[in-house]
Image (cartoon, rainbow, N blue to C red; front, side, top):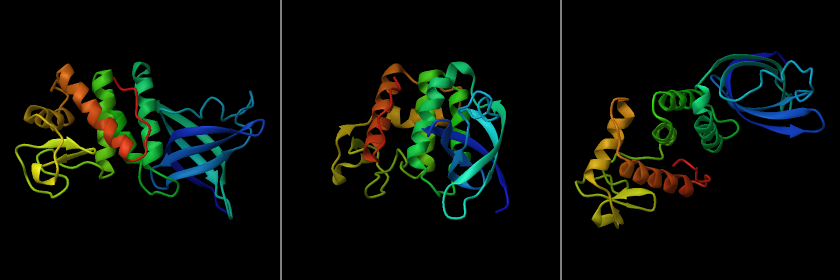
Length: 221
């Protein structure tokens, strides 16, 4: 079959055999794919230095007739975040790897946006904003001024079972209006700062959403 090429982000690589990797990538036009990178673990492999996460990649591959395709070329471009943000950026990759499964057509633009959100903000706050961006793009979040159960606008909302809920739908721990205003403001502008208490509360909300959707909680704060 004809060789294909696309822009991609490496999500993960898994050792296979004595010298190869199975790689999972999010591509701009092909979504999430898995490829065999034959010999990529050998010292003289042309893939060895280029096949790294957190970089803009240009990959080429030969699709398999019935199964996994084979990686044929990798060109590594610019880093998506500076080195100081690398641990947090890897956490974004881990979340994206759970949100986007094999064959999903989306994910590249969403992860790119999450990297940008992270890079523009302080480390701890940046990873919260980046994960929030990914969850929002997947439709796993609702507006913070409406009940996520009934959809009605509400001034007094509580957090229960990883959702904002009004009293009629079974509210839980009250969410302050200040927190509900500061989260969208922080997402929209790099000039907005959040208090340590709000960051801690926001992190707890994010961890609840991750757990609800079967994603391992992150060490974000």
